[in-house]
Length: 403
Image (cartoon, rainbow, N blue to C red; front, side, top):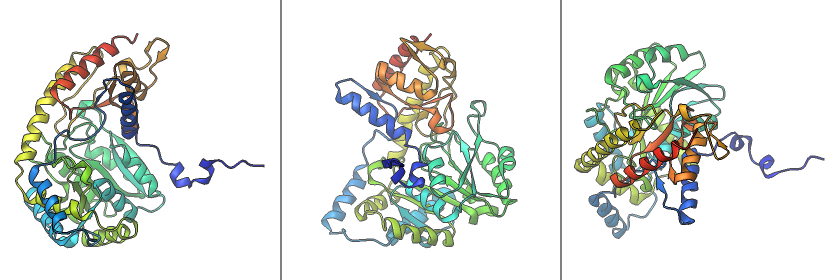
């Protein structure tokens, strides 16, 4: 007689998914902190800045004004108009409010698009290293992830030639982020135009461009692949308020896309969550129509921290590192430590190394296995200078123990 387990009772769809490695490491770090350890958390992808005051004030006013009812599924008209104006101003994208769908974070935005476009067996090309949830979202949509790897020598960026080689008759979409989580890499206008040329030749292929780190860019003006005329109707631009506006907990993201794709996302969202929090939308409108001085100040602070962290990483024997051009992550190659041991613990993977560092010196990072890069760990520098200096001192001390 077969014994049913809880796992057997869950759907195959759920059992096929992996737990988010970043959230798992954050959970473990919190457990150690509750035990009294002085943990320095460099695992979470979250700005350490407060939401700007004018955005908080707009939310307070919305509450006082009684703006507490359901909103339209794709978002309030004023917010969608504000987003359309922003996309024209900053990204050279021509959208009206009918092209915009506001969701509960950019994560939901990407999931909506994949569920709308991908059929079972469709292939989605994902640039690696990739954000941890991309693979699982494609699997949830019953698609097949096709991984194309960038190398540290090319700042982890995939080339147009690699994209062309990966395309098959089953390819439905290409999914990537720039600036990139976890590498901080930024695709140049030239590189994105070359990729767009490949896409233009393949009329069934869509591009899902995750631009959530747009404002955290150390190289100058951000370029959106959706602004290339030949493919503009097949690019879904994803963005949101979490990173550039320090609004992670407010949960507001959005897409700009062809009207029929936006309508499809509206349809699926209407059956899953309906409209995003009304108060958060009022806050987001204040952010997207307000002054960007805060984002520039925040980026300047991240740039200083980036330089600090990269300099300290370069001082650790056996660590290889490139210089990230955006976001707030360093992604060092730690492969020289794989296979080494200390006190009976052998490092077999980047995930093992991240856990060893956490348990030994109480600094949390994330193993690159979760990002499709088993030789790397991700270190967030969204932390104070003092904590970053202490964390890197501890990491250097910890790695020296491995023989």
